[in-house]
View 1 (spheres, rainbow, N blue to C red):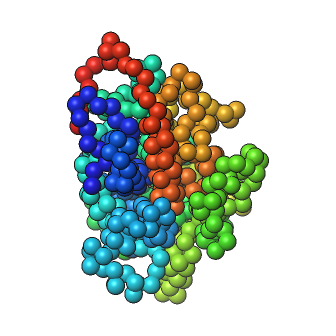
View 2: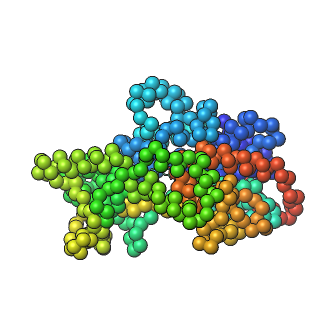
View 3: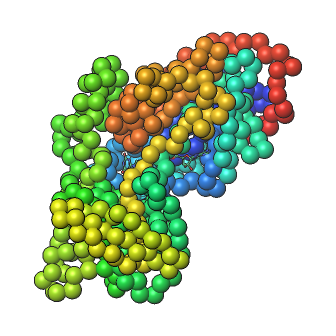
Length: 442
Ligand SMILES: Cc1cc2nc3c(=O)[nH]c(=O)nc-3n(C[C@H](O)[C@H](O)[C@H](O)COP(=O)(O)OP(=O)(O)OC[C@H]3O[C@@H](n4cnc5c(N)ncnc54)[C@H](O)[C@@H]3O)c2cc1C
């Protein structure tokens, strides 16, 4: 199935930047739209991905980690339950449908969901160009079109969909080093880590990624003490209760979008515990049992340094010295460790940096946040008529679900509807003199 069938001199209806779950879901939604519409209404799209192959947070694909979202919130089901790109279709294709039913869980293993995404991406391979890192987006043709630059190639389009995800966030003054890691790279770092019998790791943070990193290091290195350092008293469980979970529903996006700013903030603050600085209850219980077992056996190597913070780190090529402050007493303890892992969160990639020249035409609100419409289209100056759609990084407009998988299926359908409506508008005449540089067709 291909979302694109380009002819020489054509202009794309959409260039997708990034090919993670958001733009993958959009590629499928476009392909399904093209399958059912008249030939003249088909959308021509291509997706550019900087990685050399499909990969979804590969550095955190622990063998025992599970998804934090129901398998029914896959790439398509909430938009089109009849799609053959669903997780259930994937299971059927793998011959594992009956086994998964007997597994009796809504939450697949993360490695399994990764394999599902890779399977779907493989079926959409004609729509994506891997190894294409986008560096600039430039308005052309008087702002009716955009040139998207990836290396030496330029793709001309009426719209872009920016879905570049999250990047690691380290505390101020901390820089990644040989033994100073962010959790997003932990599996890659551990694979290259050649200390035969490490003695100690420090993990900073109290969210899901921190707890998973603690669990991984504790299991993988039986000689090592693992110190979990966080300012809370203990890990807090994620709120995945029935009524609250509705905050991720498509209807909640409508409600959030129309709400006044103070109500938006109120709802976000009430329910940040669905996603931020919280841990799955099963994982908390598992870690507690391990710590308790070690206490009974008298061999304690899983240590919770709660109500504490790391005040300084000295990095060396072969390890670190971190000073840990116990907040209630102010007592400071230096800890030697083989490595320190910062599980201190993620932040959305700065899209205006990525959008280059086109970014300057995007309008911002009084808090300097991008103004975005309900259909995920950025509000731009009138002189930029090409569309810039954002997937992710719109929490201030669409709510807490914006960076998560819950939204991807329905949001893709909404963007396709918006693109289809826009594509019915005629392209303005394009004087040849205004076309910059050779267009490379893919
Ligand atoms: C470890 C981990 C587990 C998670 N688990 C869940 C979960 O269980 N449930 C849930 O709802 N959410 C989860 N999330 C949240 C996560 O944001 C979403 O799952 C999902 O990744 C969002 O998809 P995306 O396509 O928007 O972004 P991403 O998956 O981050 O994909 C962005 C893509 O853009 C590419 N890219 C970036 N810059 C460029 C560029 N300049 N040019 C070209 N390509 C570029 C990247 O290489 C990447 O492939 C998890 C996040 C992490 C880190």
